[in-house]
Image (cartoon, rainbow, N blue to C red; front, side):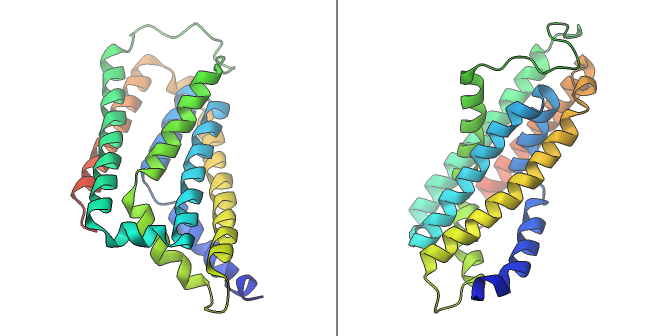
Length: 216
């Protein structure tokens, strides 16, 4: 099968793309460091669902419309940059609101309970960040056709390749979350937490500026 022949190159490309710094890495690192592994799962699921939606949109030709339409691209660009800026400002607000006293509410070796609303918020955050990224639309539109032969059904093959990408990225991101979460006791120290929030906020605001100001 043609898809089997191109799979090694596709997997290598996906790994390299997943390992590149960006909003996904920033969100995963922050949540795993401050809340532990399991809450981060919801963020990863949201991020990967956003990727899969864009992939299906590329397969259906909708991503091409976004890539070709200046208005659609600008709307998504502004929305994406605005949401990243909001997340960055929220992190900086946490810096100034953080208590200088250690957090003794929960034992350091266990995750605090996370109600369903917190999981929903983590999922939504990841999903919106990924979906409100016009670069993802352009990337999917340009990336997947390289691995699809003209004789193959485009939408079905895109859906299969996208599923492979989601599985690979989920494995990598959850591995990152697990590694960071093991050091969460250190990250929860008030001084370290404030620094982490400051760095994360700065990175997210910088990414918002890059999304807003970068050329198509």
